[in-house]
Length: 120
Image 1 (cartoon, rainbow, N blue to C red):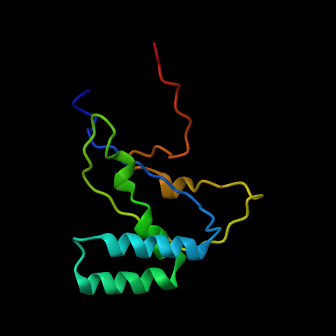
Image 2: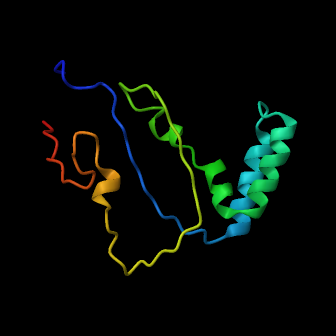
């Protein structure tokens, strides 16, 4: 790694998921919250109320991006944040990448094609 390269990498993922069974999703989130022994009771009650009213909130309790990288060799998580929201989605519509939104400070677009890795 050259001196100019940062050892920090920002990984951006944008997904649209279909909640095909909202009640099942909510119940799974409620179970996860109920089983969390480290969560204080006051926070648990607020979380249970939130996930019971909002499928997006329930999903945020079940999908943890930290789990995505916890077993990746050679990396240590420095910072993570995530959110979820209900969204309109048309599967027939092409997904337009907003170049401005995904641009880095150096001006590299997030939707660029990367070269295939050299695997030997």
